[in-house]
Length: 416
Picture (tube, helix red, strand yellow):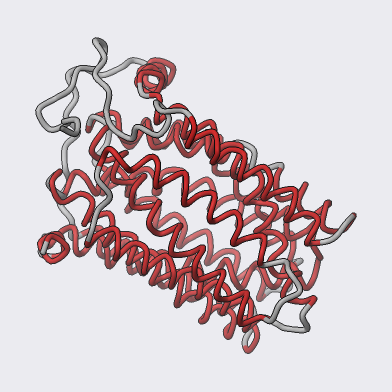
């Protein structure tokens, strides 16, 4: 079985474990931080903290992608982990010293968002460096399982921790996971970047990557449509704690909500790893599942029992886990090794460019109208983008297209 074969690669296995523990700490922090901010500051403050993260994250993504395509990816991720461990430690000490909770969390979220602009493209580009192309779908499925296991356990731990001991303990656990991840990355070999020549400036680096993106309709369209789709998704995410509060529930149910979504994503990742979607069908399945996710999200705001909401959360997670593996695999097997860091950064920037505004807008809409109205508008936007992806043939063709400026290498092949 290819899943077993991918797991059998020692350095890839260590990367999965280290990054999974890293994500565990991040999810503990997000749940603890999110519930604390929502209780203290309300919807606008809750939206503002997500804006702070992306204001720190997005401007550095291009630099992060450039660094990842010049330096060994393992080294970039290691330095980022250690930097975030130091930053979160400072925030924990500041809260223990009595500094303002909202301001402190806004600052640490902004700073760790900046550090994440280097680690996220580094890990994404490192996976295909460690794994052969023929088992990339299974490797990405295992990565999805590790990530979703973290996002399943993290919300449960974070919800209980913030309720019993406060946000400071959540930050302490986050620090420990960063240190563990850094220790694991230290044991992974440095993989040199294979480049024919060095570009002289950031502009040339980005220009080359953007020129490649424009030659691939599936990639260009995916970035643009994800840019629009995430506006609706961000507004929906802001409404989750307040939808739970409206039902008279608390932090534990907030954590349970996150755990069910992650559990569904794990199921989707495993299914896609065991039975990968063929290249010729990837795009169609991807956009159909995005539309399904939007309709599931609308159910979260409906006046139905909480257990039924959790069922829709589980379905949404399963669809999301599947399409996550599809996209990561396509990015891995259809982008040249020396371009992966920058292309991953452009993908992230395009997808997330409106998110600094969207959480604030979502918080304002929830306060001005209500959760259900906000969700209805957001889902309409999301369904529209997924429909465009299904209708246009070149958008749903998720595979590398030959271009004279970017010829296919021996390791990048199209489907039969």
